[in-house]
Every structure is written in C-alpha cells, then in structure tokens.
Amino acid sequence: MNLLVIIIILWDLRFNLALILSCRGKVDTFWGNRTFKELTIKYINPFVYMYSLLIAEFITDGIILLMLILIAWRLHLPLSQKPGVKITFLLGSL
Image 1: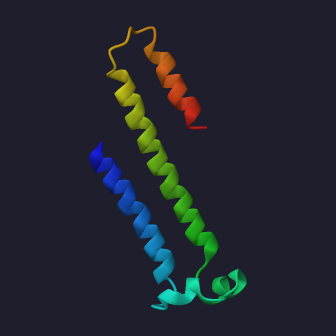
Image 2: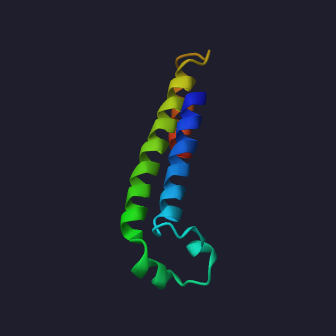
C-alpha cells in the first residue's frame, strides 16, 4: 500500500515537471505575464499533455479502486455484507 502511494506521488511529480520543463529550459515561463494562448503557441500542446494526463489518472484511479476492493474483501465481515462494502466503494468512484 505504501509503495502505491509513493508511485502515485512520483507519477504526479513527473507530469508537473514535464509541464514546467516543456518550455525548453525556461522554468520561469509559467510565473510570468504570459497568456494561455501565448503558452500554447510557443511552448506546449495542451491537448496532448491533458490527454496523456487523463490516461494516467484513469489508470491510477483504477489501481486505487482495485486496492480498496481487495482490502474490503479481507475484512472480517459476513459474506452477505462484503458486496455492500464493495458497492459503496464503486459508488464513491463516480
């Protein structure tokens, strides 16, 4: 479980660093007075970045949900209550 948290934090840091460093070494670009249009024309393609971020977040959310279901299965509950706990987790993912 701790390894999963570390992996997700590193995954998120990678995307943030990729966004900041995508300006060809000009790290201060995002803290200047640039408009979104100027940033997209000169430095990054926001659609490619957001699409890849969407896929990565979908994968990590699925992994987290799977881990919760596995933890819920190991709970000391009667078999009749375990599906209810799983459904609660699945509803929380919406």
